Length: 422
Ligand code: GDP
Ligand code: IMO
Ligand code: MG
Image 1 (spheres, rainbow, N blue to C red):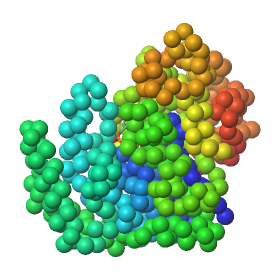
Image 2: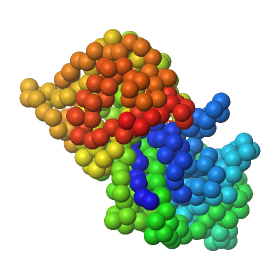
Image 3: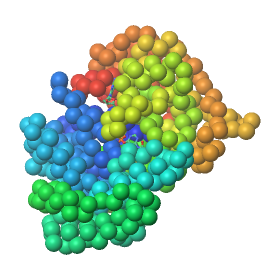
């Protein structure tokens, strides 16, 4: 019986969705605790492929409670569509719970997100355009609208109309098209009616499950380097993506947490703007993108690709308290004759092994690489450590040593069964 947190250790898209689905075989409840539909979590089961944005990746295991916790920002129209499309594909969605404290994202947040990005020009963050930042800003400004309001159409309409008017003034002042409040309300009303039966105080259900000794798994979104406090600020998302976020984002006390799973891609990717020391701009970067199919699950944007960076990954394991690593996409490196690992940076003539906090400094560092021989054979069929070529095992061992955590799971393909315990 355990309460575990699973987080991304890089800049997102490490394969969290796949790992949650795999681990949920032995779990009673999966809880998302931050972010929103900026996330895109892919789960492949047999010939079926699903991309989840708000619904927890435990949804494919019958009987598992799937909680959308208080720390999220939720677009009600998109959530309704996501739930309905799962239902249309024969997935039981009745075990979904939506927190009455989660903040809601409306059309005005999305429009404002895009307006801010446009105004920032070359200094843009490269957001997903899903209104994440503006919705979290409204939460901090204490003018956000929460999930509980979905159960009260009358007061929801009053609140929504007032906020929409406020944003329309901003849009008009900026010379941007304003929103038609009646049209937008009509969409919100449909979604509110659909979602109302799923809204509850999820803090109670999560704590009841933890106290009853159930297996609870917290599903992180994004990655540690996108954390609003610890990431490459300002090129980050607007929530705490690190393991500590599970406590505030679900209302569960730190003493309940047993294991912190860190999902770590065998190389590095990033979507959007911001520093990325090991980014590859040559044919090998293109190769990783092609073999790894590195295109955003939410926006379809090509992901920037680069070598494994042990400096950022070790920092990430430290702030998350990772004690078990799930290394994913090892198979993507199968054809490479030589593989690089960044073990330190050079900054202004000095060698450093700690990640600089300042994004401008991180943008100036030069990675120092250690070269390891590749294995030049397929790992996709491996189902145990013993099945892996020796050089692949050495590569994993070196990563574990550099980030100071134990490799517990290895993933060698997108399917459920392409996973084994280390
Ligand atoms: P998430 O956001 O962390 O859930 O990750 P995404 O779903 O955005 O991106 C991970 C991508 O890699 C998805 O297309 C997965 O199907 C795929 N994937 C996951 N694990 C592996 C693996 O071990 N090998 C390969 N080749 N693909 C994987
Ligand atoms: P998953 O859960 C990768 C990135 C965006 C942008 C920055 C801010 O699938 O790993 P936002 O819309 O959150 O304000 O954008 O964060 N970003 C992600 N990158 N995976 C994600 O989620 C991401 N969610 C946000 O590209 O750089
Ligand atoms: Mg993703």
